[in-house]
Length: 228
Image (cartoon, rainbow, N blue to C red):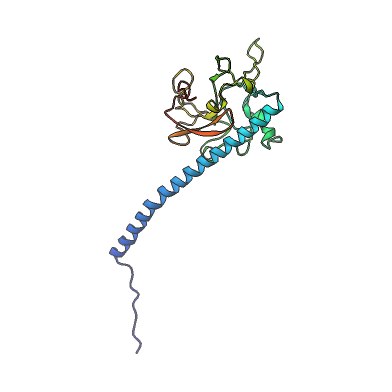
């Protein structure tokens, strides 16, 4: 006569212990994944800005040391958001492998992976071009990148790099969001074309006129602080 073996199921206590272990592991794992993603987004942001800096350096070398002339301070990372010549990427796309892109296409490797994950690059502005630049003659300009023709006024050409004072201390581009401080001292404000918060939390990435990239604390007043 054969003995009958009964398969014993998990007891309630055992199931609760397993569930508790899973919860503990999840609590440890998800913050780690979040930190890793933020670190990767910051690294890809650095890389994207360096790509733009390289393209700007090459553009100025090809254009008598002059910066491109653009139409606004809010900059998108598609080839053409506004009219021809009004967008930074319109001028830089040929230097970034984007010669054959359509106007609405994202210019590859010009924005953080986090930005592309959170935003439509045709709708949301990625960067702000500097609206305040000190020149070697002691004056300041809002139009280092020139400006488009308005009414009967002619277009203003981009500034010569030789006229920019201390290029390693003044930013050309900075991450754009609704909380960034504009030249008048107020936050940009909520708008459908802006991220509501800084992309990288407590810092914004900035590309300086010597084409190095640096993280600036979000509380930094980069218009009045003597460092900039």
